[in-house]
Amino acid sequence: MALRHGGKILADQLHIQGVRRVFSVPGESFLAALDGLYESGIENVVCRHEGGATMMAEAHGKLTNEPGVAFVTRGPGATNGSSGVHVAMQDSTPMILFVGQIARDHRDRGAFQEVDYRAMFGSLAKWVAEVDQTDRLPEYIARAFLVAQSGRPGPVVLALPEDMLSAAADVPDRPKVVLPSASDYATQLEAIRAKLAQAKRPLLIAGGPMWSEGAAADLRAFAESSELPVAVPFRRQDYLDNRSSSYVGDLGVGMNPELAKSLQDSDLLVLLGAELRDIATDGYQLIDPTGVVPPIIQIHPGSDQAGQVYPVEIAVTARASDVLAQLSVMPPITGAADWTQQLRGAYEAWQAPKETPGPVKMEEIVPWLSENLPEDSILTNGAGNYAAFLHRYFCFKGYRSQVAPTSGSMGYGFPAAIAAKLENPERTVVCLAGDGCFQMTLNECSTAVQHGAGVIVIVVNNGKYGTIRMHQEKTYPGRVSGTSLSNPDFAALANSYGGSGVTVTRTEDFPNAFKQAQQSGALSIIELQLDDEVLSTSMTLSQTREVGRGARNQD
Image 1 (cartoon, helix red, strand yellow):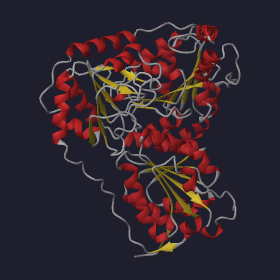
Image 2: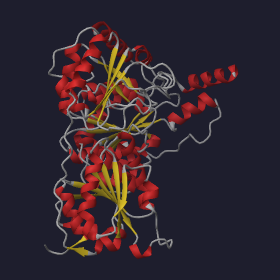
Image 3: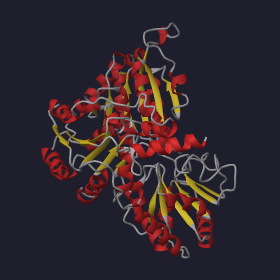
Image 4: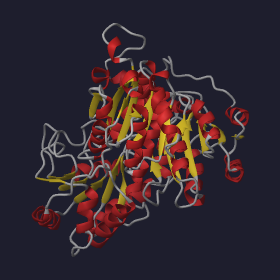
C-alpha cells in the first residue's frame, strides 16, 4: 500500500461509496481534502455560503436517496452550515457534513475558530464524531455512510483536524457500505390487510424517507385497486400522482378543512413511512395524544419511531417502499369506496381558485404552471405564505417533482433548485420563493451561473415576511413591527449575474415571461409584484387584521 495523506484517503473513500458530487465553501482547515478531491473525478460545487452548501447537499440526498456531502470550514463555517443539517434531521434525509477542525495539539486553548462539534451538533445530527487518527478515516467514513442511510436516515457530522488530514498513512480502503436487508413481516402484512378490510373510514398517509418512483407506482396500484384514500404530510405531495382517484390532499399548513375533519373521523390511520407531527395534526389539536386516538398502523424504517407520540396497534420496522411492493400485488381490499370518493370530491372542490386582490394573481399563475410545465419538472420552495399557493393549486404528477423542507427553513428553495438542476440537467427546475425567502440565499446566483445550473426562480414579492405578518395581524392587529421589507429590483439582479430577469405586474404577462425564461436556458428570475393586500390563499391582509381584532375584543 502506498502512503496517502488524509485528504487523498478521504476522497478515495468517497469515490468507493459512490459520491459523484460534493458541495463546499473552502477553508484552510481542510486544504488536504480539497487536494484529495482534485484528481478524484468527484465534482466540487463551490458555493457562496455554508448554509447554501448544506442545503444543496440535503436536497441532493432527497433527490437521490444517497447521502448528500458537504464540506465547510471550522467555527463560523460550521455554524453557518448547521441550517442544512437541521433540515436533513427534520426531513430524515441522508447527508454527511465534513467540518474542518483545529490541529489536535491546539485543543482546549480557545484556538482560532475552535468549537466542540460533538456538543454543537449533538442534538442536530444522528451521529457526530471527530477523526483523530489518519489511518481510521476509512472506518469513520464507512460508518458515517451506514448511519446516514440506515433506520431513519439523517445527517452525520465528521470533524477533521487539519493536522490529521494532512498526515500520511498506508491504511487500506473500506468497501462500499451494504445496508441491512429488510426483516420478515409477512404476518404483519396479513394483520394490516385484515384491519383495512374491517375499516369503514381508513386513511393512508404516505410520507417519510427513502421513497422512489417504484414506491409511488406501488402506492397508486394498491390504493386504486382497493379504492383507499391517500393523504400526504406537509410538502410530500409528489408521493402520489395528484390526478389519482385515491389522492385526497396534503396535511400541511393551511390544509383543506374537509381533510382535517377526515383525520378526526377516520377509524384507521395507516402511516406509510410518515409520522403524525404538529403540522399534520394542526398543533396536535385534530388528534390529541392525551385523548382518544384512532387505531394507528405505522410502517417506518426507524425501529424507535413507532409509538413515540401516539399509541400504535401494529408497528412494522421497514421501509414503506418494501411493504408497498408486497401490498400492491396482493388481492384488493374493498369496503371504503364511498368514503374515498367523498374525500376525493372535497379535494377537487378545494382546488377551485379563490380570488386575491390586485392585477397579479397567484391562484391563476400556479394553475398555469401546473398545466404547462413538463410533467417531469421539479419544483422547489423554502418557507413563506407564497408556498401555500403552490401547495394548494399545483397538481404534482410524479415522484420527486417536489423538493421542499418540512422543517420550514427559509432560503432553502434556491439552493435546492441548483442541486436539482445539477443532478437533472435535462429537466425543468423551478424555484418559488418569497421576497424574504429568496434574499436569504440569493448569493448562490453566483454558484448557479458558475456551474451552469439554469434554474428558473419565481420571486413572489409582497414586500413583507408574509407568514410572520399574518400571525402578527392575528395576534397584535395593526401593530406592524419587523415584518416589512425593502427589496432590490430582482430582474436587474438576475441580469447583473449574467442571467435573465423579467418583472411581471399583470397576470396575463406571466406566460410570455416564463417562456422567455425557458428559452434562455440560463439562470432566470421572474419577479411577481403582488398587491399589498395579498397575504394568504384564504384571507387578505385587512381580513386577517379584522379577525385579529375580533379575537382581541372577545378576550
